[in-house]
Length: 321
Image (cartoon, rainbow, N blue to C red; front, top):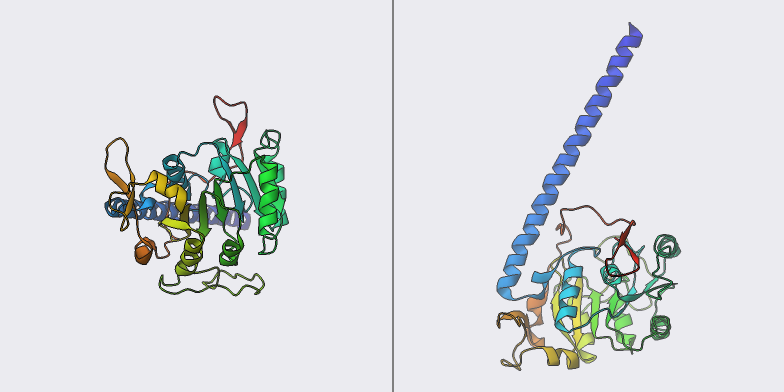
């Protein structure tokens, strides 16, 4: 009798646990849909305001950066270029993975040895390495070695022309940008959007890395914009989540934007329809491109990225997705 009771009790507890788990999954799914719908509402507002982040979407990026980068490359007529990423993580979720599977050459740098080992284990068993399209470096990027590291990356990718640089170290991004001497076409750089856009604040240069998940990290919107404009880059937008800023080298931007309203505004134009798609704001009005933190938004209702192989049709390589 006791054994039967214990068996029935165990069955009931397992049944209850399964129901609770199913309920949590259902709630998570509903929350995900709600957060996705909120993102879509913000996209519609961005279309009205002619902001760059109306074109955002996520494949491998943390949020909507993949779509924004793809749009900029299309507008600047960049195909299968070269990209360097500081703070690449383990490769599953970063700003240049999507470019890699589309045929780009990439050099990923990360100070975490485990991240680099995972990349080598999962990504180098394809033809990426054999085709000289993916290179990884295990190093802490500093103001002293940034330019030498970039020179090594360019040499490994067999190019002198860098299309995209993505900087996301959570800590010294401002100082790295300030020390940068190589001039990529596009710079994607993290900013601390919890700091109001009128304040120029940075983590001091010589403070050891120590981000603990609070809002003491990186640099403010204004700090990054000021150093970028000093280097003759123009801010073209931010992602909707308030993570990254997107700059284009000013001499290149001027070749691809409508100058009808200069010097107040420039525009990326929809060539098919002849109307304005994205407004480029002048420097004294850049606050219009600042986004408050919205890290909780959901940018896809599908599955998370994995490490399995797909075959890119028309290409001899298998690709990770």
